[in-house]
Image (cartoon, rainbow, N blue to C red; front, side, top):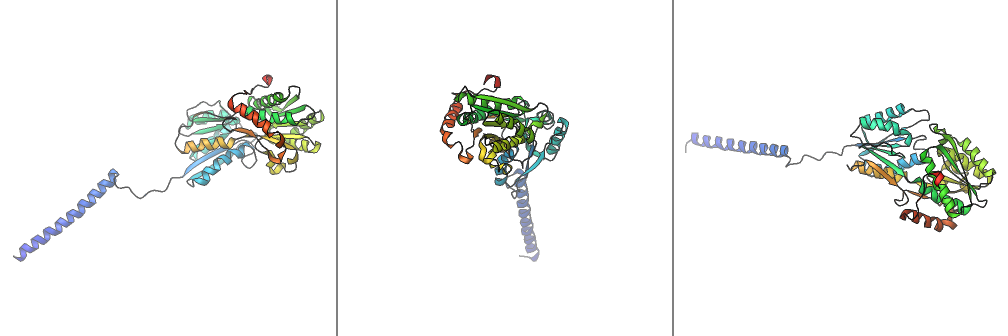
Length: 358
């Protein structure tokens, strides 16, 4: 065999080998383009959750803090989630609240929790501007849009339970209710409380007052006026007073402590608030409003890609309202309160939302 022939065969083998390499590279590239060979897994993209708080913010115990408590376990469990927050102020206008929501949306937050009915007008505008963002608003059902969930509660049912407690504990057959701002929402608390009292004893007197009238929201943060209102009730015969008035309720607890009477808190376990340490021995119970359950369910569904729009109602049946037993002051009447709670949850007892019909 000639040297020329050997050289030709060697050259051909090299060409074939090169073609095989090129062919393999081409097939690999094609497979990658068509998705048969996955690229290295990318890190999970960060998703931002937003919470727009009402007056007080999350550091003040109550429904603002509960909104945060509801979301926190989701943040702890999923490190790809991050949280941005904003807070309302007493002099804010609807336009200012709307701008606050726009800024949060502009920073990429989705979903966004809006705490309090004071944001309703603002959300009604901004949710239309950001239709791909899922919004959840606590304590309002007026914003009916395809990307908004109303997270609402049957406050009247929880208030009914503490009304039962008040009726079973009063010795003077006179109890009181203090509302922060005269609105349909706070009227539900009053109606439930009166109905609970009357379910135990129709002869008990219930005195009611409101600190301010809508649209003046100062009644939710005026402990001095809460103190005066409660003091007046106690001095006129009431020995148990229930306040649905936000920070104003602190004044009620102070008056109860000074006069040796009972007070009833709202939304969360007020006997555990650091600011109420001096008053906890006279806080009979608190009406629980599980805002944490509502916000957690909304955010979890939104993050999972589920549709969230519509009205989600939390009542006794769903575990959304209840009462506290801190201090053991209702230990002797717990079975009676629980019996009423079961009747409400089953539908056997219908609790009114209008004080005039309680």
